[in-house]
Image (cartoon, rainbow, N blue to C red; front, top):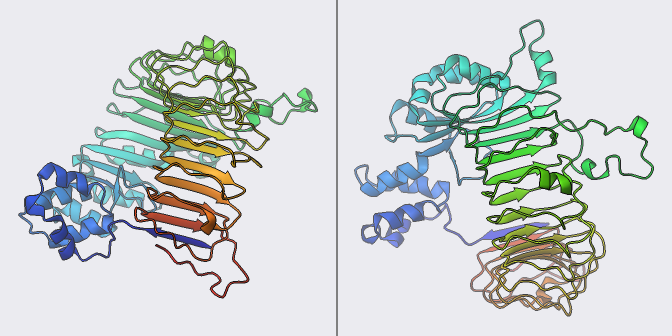
Length: 483
């Protein structure tokens, strides 16, 4: 059973009332523009329909609605792109909606893609920035019909099986050259490989994910199991091929998954680096000579084990070390500017004598017994995720500055911080026994037993109750009373 309630600006609100509430004539333009970025899509459409066409506020609504758009009907995240219907897209292309589309995300997903490109060719070539998402055959179709001068982002699947199936008796299509203005490249390889010629100077971000059916967790156990047989190791050679591209010096973001670390040379201007399941060990981190400019480093699913001799870049703010087989953090020296740390699913069973910097975010999940006794959490932590089996929170002290908490509870005796705003809880007991602070804005409870949620929480905006245990003795079984 799942309940979800959101106290936000509803899409069903009368647009006339909404305009009256906002009192547009008194709002500074820049303030109104910021408000628009938080409004639901349907509310923006309502505003567009009722505002006078010559109204300068309407121009802001149109820009928010149609400045950055996507043809993907399944897109959930509206932060980068607003989803438009086929009818809206046609009105934009024909000029019936008078706005300059700044960025378009094209999703290649059906047999009508070629027809779509031919029909809207002129419109597509006038848009300043385009993101293509699809497979290499769709990209080849795009490249043959549309000029790629405005193609700034490519998200592409390259699958060897498709090459043989779709190209039987034909010349194989190779994804060899990139548009000269490309900024972001994301490639998913399935039993295939690519060679890229002369990466464009404009490129700032490269992600290559090798997907050949093995779990990322295999990197931890590969060849290390006591009963493994080297002569018949089913995981042998599961990593991607050596990355023999010459990465440009001006690259800012690099992400590799299931790729070989051999021969990898890191550009010195990188600010974001992700090497997931690349067989990275502690000595490799040292030999890679991490750029001093790094602000985010992800090393999840690598057999690191020991970080005592590793020096992290001084500007590092985010460090992800999930499932790395780390046995102890006692002698680990974290950079002083570190703000977010994930150390979940490792081999250590406690954090005694670990010195943390002034963190704001800390994630600790473990399926094994874990102790938080004698842990010196920094007072600066605002978001804490702790999921530990059979952990006793009864005597635990939660930091007063916490704004967001994600925990599992066996009982309702935990005293929540007075300024807590977000709570995610796995709880087998009665939810009504929880004493939540008045500051709480978002609550998600999983598995808890609830018949009536009747706490007077005046700041509550979102409530999610999922997989609830019903109370068979109640006359109101299955009903939830919300604040």
